[in-house]
Figure 1 (cartoon, rainbow, N blue to C red):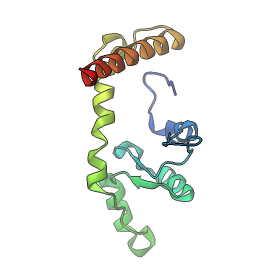
Figure 2: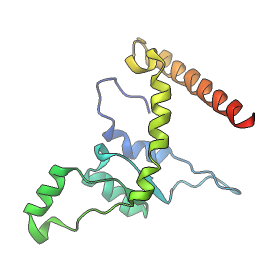
Figure 3: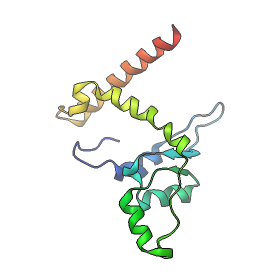
Figure 4: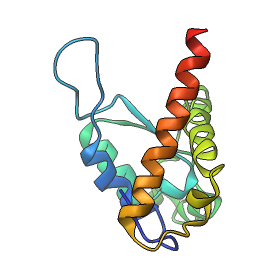
Length: 139
């Protein structure tokens, strides 16, 4: 989902999840992944509630200020957030891809004037990364 350059990405968490499709070896792609790994920017109560309602494991560390506020509330603050540290390490795959995309200056700086031209550049760069990785694994 494309947003304004200065916009926060956290509000896009649920709309992106609604568009998500997880391919399996056979059959239609699933609309519900087993788990979602994200950084602390996505640790809001709303995002966690959405994941819990859909039966999706949240692999999102808690922000320090959220943990402090929860502890201040005592037993009314709810349970401490837990996440699978080993599964969280896999998140770096996505971070590496984003860094590869942003290596193209036009993507990192968002110089394009229209959303369509920016999205076209993003698709072009993603294709270049995919082809480069594909040729690296086949040789």
